[in-house]
Length: 174
Length: 157
Image 1 (cartoon, rainbow over the protein chains, first blue to last red):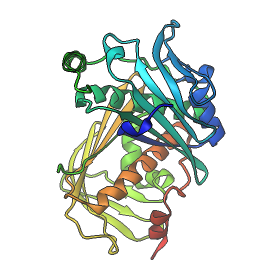
Image 2: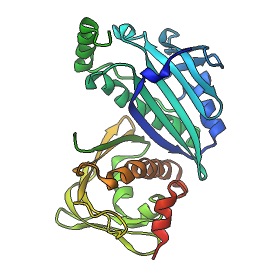
Image 3: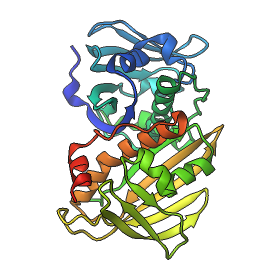
């Protein structure tokens, strides 16, 4: 089992969606659905705790690899993330990405939490803080309008790449 | 300890002009801002006013900057008497075109340490801005059951 207590929440994003928990669950876990809003990426999740989690780039390469930590449809979905698809990132400690789905009146409240096991520099957190609003705004649009969202993933800004290089030399998590 | 600051980013399939209009015209805000009529059409020195669904004034705050459809800044001091009296905080709206969408960045800062109002707005903005996005993309805002406390406060005369 993965010890999740060592991960501390660093980035939290809350969004309300006119939908049902079941549909939001599908939007997060079904590969054909995630391609419509997640920069064309496909989530490939083995539907059980301890199962494999992968995020596949549009060309089929593995972008993120991890393990499923929570699988409780349609309420909780969490997995570890090791970002293999970006230079150097795969050597950083894995992080934890969790989604909580709750009913809120006629809508659904979706809470995404990105947690880390070490003192991640702000420059590295910036990556998720830039990406999550795009991804989750897109998810909401697709569920509410039925139209896919064509947004591209931007490459990491230079100060983020520098912060990753520095972390790989200093290894502050050791 | 650093002072609390809230930042929320959302992408909306609408032009910055449409988003600006929806943020500043009372007849539009009441369709998604949980019944609140919020008017912020004025220039710096004018006021942002908000009236709750019960007709009670909730805000009368100076507009600090207005550069349609890019940047709007106003002070924020709720007029409800049951809230702790705190100095005014500040809300900044930044609107940027982003490939056929608008990136809307809302920054709410200048809170004092331990602010209770900060806790409230941290829950409130994601609901209001999610509803704004729904309204502009589908013509329908979200239902106001997002926060019982706020709903109760809104209907109190």
